[in-house]
Length: 250
Image 1 (tube, rainbow, N blue to C red):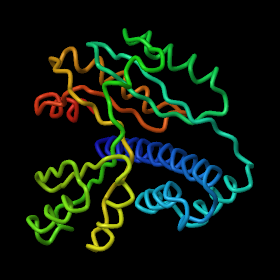
Image 2 (cartoon, rainbow, N blue to C red):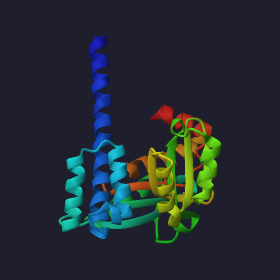
Image 3 (cartoon, rainbow, N blue to C red):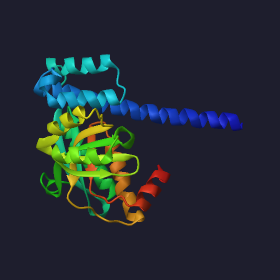
């Protein structure tokens, strides 16, 4: 029975991983499609598409899937509307949601329901966004950085606003308009980021107890799992205690 139980657990874990991988691919395909539709199918002249392709490759997306997504976007076969939603999670945590949808009425109704059930609220445009700034964010494994001091100097010269080197990972933040220059600087250094994105970075963070934080995190998880949601940003301060307990609970 023990073996059977273990195998059942392995199958369950694999199903969860497969589901997350499928959801990730769906989001990446939509981003590639919209990027190709808005800026053309040639990544050399379309920075957004180039970034989308890079992120898809990092996720090990098959080449033919990437090419089909580009083709659909270039031909206009797929029609998604990009929408930015704002809201408050429990505890006053500000939330920004990037979504791509073929039915905005459906999406806003479903998101409003998620917020309401969690004890939060979907807000009007501008109610939350003033708390965030659009930034370029690069996450780089530490082993890809041969010389930290030289790396820091190069990043500052390229226009980095902040470089944080922690245990095993470096995070470089730059202004929105400097994203392309930062990409080029990393390419010249032969350093490939694990992740590169244009993110909504909060100006300040909300400190909550674990009891309060888990309510907000539960809603954030539900929002991230929504089919039309691409990315979720928030200003909840993830303290060591909250991060540890959240990882344990997950």
